Each structure stands twice: as C-alpha cells, then as structure tokens.
Image (cartoon, rainbow, N blue to C red):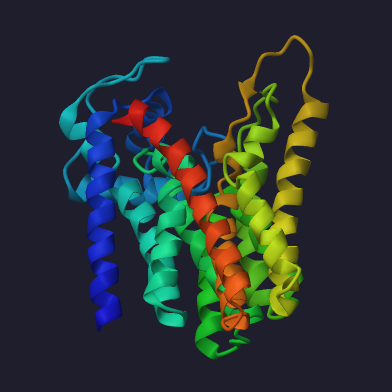
Length: 355
C-alpha cells in the first residue's frame, strides 16, 4: 500500500509539473498541425487506415487524442499557419493533458518498479535521473506521441530487466510483454524496430509477442509519408542528448563487474547501434540541394528511458555486490552524484527557457 501511495503522489506532482510547462509555453507549429490535420480533421477510420499525413502515422496516439477531445468537448479553434505559435491558455493545457499524463505515468512506473524491486533510494534515483535529463522537460508537455512512446519504452525495458535479471517467465510477464509490443507497434514506427530487437534477444513466443504486432506496425511504416531529412552539424548530440557521456561511462564501468549485465548491455548497444545506423542512412540518402527536415534528438527518444532503467539497475546491483566494500561504495556514490549534478546543470539551463 505504501508503494502505491508514494507512486500516486509522484504521479500527481509530475502531472502538475507538466501542466505548468504547458501553461508557460505556446502551442508549437507541429502540435498545431497534428491537432488540426491529424486529430480533428480525420475520422477514426482514416486514422486506423494510416492516412495521418505525418512521418509517424501509427494510430494509437492520434485516436487516443481524438477520443479525449470528444469526451472533453475540446477543439483547437485557431487555424494552423506554418511556423505559427499559438498562445491560448485553455488549449495549451487541454491539448497537452494526455501527453503530460503519459510522461508522468512513465516516470511513476519506473519509480514504482524500483520501489518494489529494490528500495526507496533506488526509486528516488530513477525519478531523479529522469528529472535531470533536459530532453524530458522539452517533450513533457507536447501534443505529440513522445510521452506515450516513452511510457511504452519504460514498460518494455522493465519487462526485459525482469526477464534477464530476475528470470521472470510467468504467464503475466508474457501477456504484459505481448501487450507492450502491440502498443509500441501501434504508437511509433520506431516501436516496430524496438519490438524486433527485443524479440531477437529473447527468441521466444515469436508469433504472439512479435510477428503479429510487427505485421500491423509494418503496414503503417510502409504507408507513412516519406520526407527528406538532413543531419545537423553536431550529429553526436542526437545520441548524447538522450544518453550523456557520463551515463554511458557509468553503465560501461558497472557492466564490467556485473556478471548478469550482458543481455541488457547488448540491448542498449542494439538501440545505440540502431540510432547510429539511422543517422548514417539519412546522411547517405540526403541529396545536396534538397533542404528537407533536420533530424532531431526526439527521434531517438527510446534511448532515454532504456538507459535510465539499465543504469539504475546496474548501479543497484553493484551496490548490492560490494555492500561491504567501503571504497567501492564511495566510488559508486560519487559517480552517481556526478551524473546527477551534470544532468541537473544542463536541465537548469533548459528550464530558464521553458519557465
């Protein structure tokens, strides 16, 4: 009961933070376009048929937003104009309320998991790692699929940790993994890749947990509009915005001494490899003279929750293993504090712009 109460309190706090962010920031061009053209203008059938005219045409987020708007009797009245920012108090909150709840649920889910599996300290560290990551704040309150994608990636990574670290192979685990993969494939085109990578690593329950959801996800991926992209000059930032150098270093250091870390390390390396492959593919397909869209760090958001959960598990397991070694404990604590301080410093800079 205590765990549920603490998690509920965190969820409420996170939701209030999200509403504050929504109130202080105008509706951006992409949000306005999605609300008008992909949510209000299209019917449920159009959305399910993949007729959303966006790079991500998966139906889960748009149909959920449409249903919420109808239940709340909300519509964005301000017409969409290219590169227009809309300042409308009620719309800024109503449009973003569902994504805020998704992001808050993702943070709360990680908090609850570590509170249940480890200790209150582990749970606080999980929440702190999210809150000291600037990109969390940038996409906390946006009328886009990012919050839902982060929530589902949290669920997928937690389930993989259950399978590989705690050897959980219960019927409930398989049902949860299957449902998560279905939702991922219906949420994001990259969720399709995450599902394929996970099932290759597990190599069990191919039909229910992989083949069927991937077939649906593939339908939307093949029918999605194709756009030209370009790589920014500072392309390493696409990766490092989601998982910083110091976090990568701490994960690598812990993995060297944690025997059961290999499957999760392979999982994280596979996600990193996919991110690098995406950057390389866009670099080689880009035609000089065609401007296109600049690739953004938000396309690699799957690295954010997966790296936080894996980092925290590795750190907790190392603290358990060397609980009687004072110097190793001090080194681990100092390393974690450094990670949080560096992330916090970057986050404060971002918050100056957002609030």
